[in-house]
Length: 102
Image 1 (tube, rainbow, N blue to C red):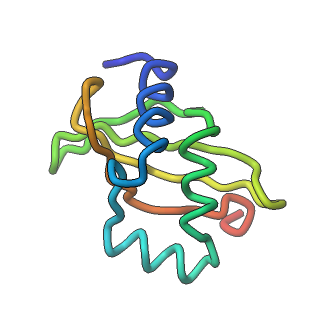
Image 2 (cartoon, helix red, strand yellow; image 1 turned 120 degrees about the vertical axis):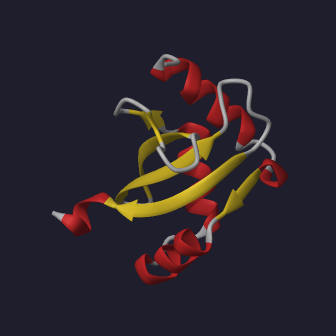
Image 3 (cartoon, rainbow, N blue to C red; image 1 turned 180 degrees about the vertical axis):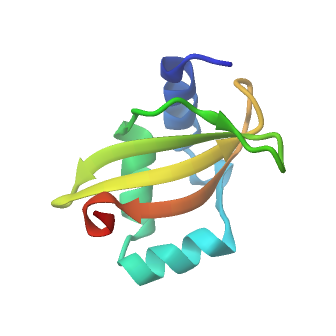
């Protein structure tokens, strides 16, 4: 399993080019529901931290990582999936407003 810092750097690098990041329908629905814009998502992906250990999705085999950052007065968490540590693309799975779920 790759180290958190390596995954963090990979996601931050991928997020510098919006063409390398795609969004699931589920994620887009949650973003709308939670009033989280793409600008906020990219801010979290580019400047956030991986605070939890990445997990392998048993269905897809992709590595799922939760990037977190306090931005625009909110603690946001963005879950992104990458194929491996050498991935050239990432898929945003969901967007969470951390304080709203507590």
